[in-house]
Image (cartoon, rainbow, N blue to C red; front, side, top):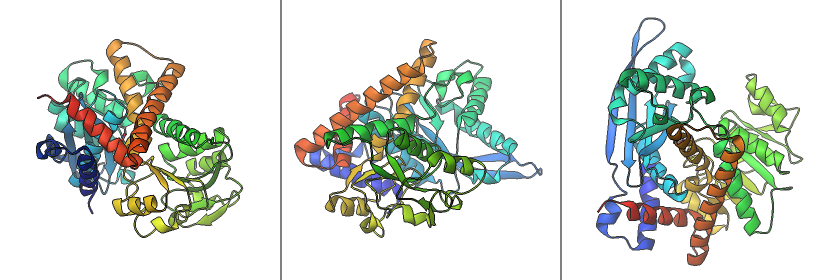
Length: 408
Ligand code: GLU
């Protein structure tokens, strides 16, 4: 099943639950706009290379389109459309006044030099600038894009439009109008949600055994936070392999090695090496997929040992796997709730830019915590009252909020 089919599957279930009309359902089945371009980039060796690029604006009933831009070799129209649609749901789940959008460039960014990446980033903004802006569509980082790329994109936009417009993009470096706390927001938000869920079960993170798949920005921070809250990281994986240690991995030591170019499974002083798949079936309480889509599938869902799966990545569990996990009474905290901390602090950044304010780290953290805990409470109550999953509840709640905001 392709990514957008997954989305339609989730929306379809929520629409059945809410008994939506055909006309109401249709609103969630097609994007408002699919923008495409071929970006021409001059490479360091003088050649011109062309990269397919997308910006999908899914729905803006609740506010300006909002969502990251990913640079990935597998990014395509279907994936970007699915992620744009999920952004609309995500912003509604945490109740921030944004719609949903996503961008993508089909490129392997690891093969590009710094200069080539900069020219690609500028070309992206030139291609879509007419459709971007603080009140129109506000991009942000996603897979393999970062604050520096946001700075470059803002610079290109401001040069093109002759305006000062820091609120046109979020996830910027601090000195360019970024927000304190944005860099760790996705993982911070996920851990607030996990804590709230564990509280419902009269548990805390103290002593909880966690397996983290993904050692990028979100995965690494999630692992650090688990440790900081007294939990144990018993498995950690990157795209090359896993490291397992039932006594708990020294994540800072392993992440320091990774920062120096090693893969986590090379850090054999801190655990036992396994293949990339080993993290999925690690003995643990909580499994955190924090990398890419479709890592828990019908094939390996039966091997999951955790009682909770926290989706820090977008779309890590396929619908078939979702059903298998649910049938085994494994609770799945859906991406549209679990990873909404990133876009929530993007909203705070946008607010600060518009008001010319700089919030303290404490203010950002407190507001993020409140937002995530409120969102969890809304979704969990909706689910418990109806005997449905957290994913079904999150989608149903979001659909209700988007429909309520729609212009009649
Ligand atoms: N790329 C992140 C996400 O998928 C953040 C989006 C944003 O901050 O706009 O939620």
